[in-house]
Length: 144
Image (cartoon, rainbow, N blue to C red; front, side, top):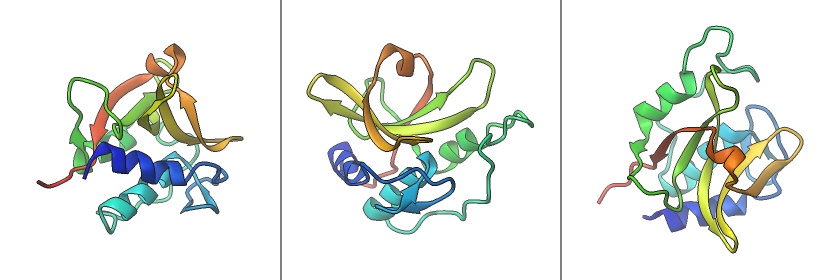
């Protein structure tokens, strides 16, 4: 398994509408649903049930729930950005990390494949605005 396979699977989701808490290719997903769908395709069954969550994730409590789950189930990424890296974003300074996407290579440079409100699953340039929000990088825990 490689990041190339992860990116290929994530790109199959492009155009999937944004639906909060969903994870169905072509029907609807949010950013976590995209990760879950790609996980199922490349690794198999999900390792834990995902509890219901609100759109603000754990902002009110200040708990890093998404980051905690990433630490439980994903592997740390290497020092250099690579295709298939899972990027964890903090959308506002001081807020919890609550968005994620997959790093990919595009014709004009690095991109991120992610799902967000009003856009569904898209592949966007990994611009300075997105890059500065990255707080952690992970990879799927491939064996071998």
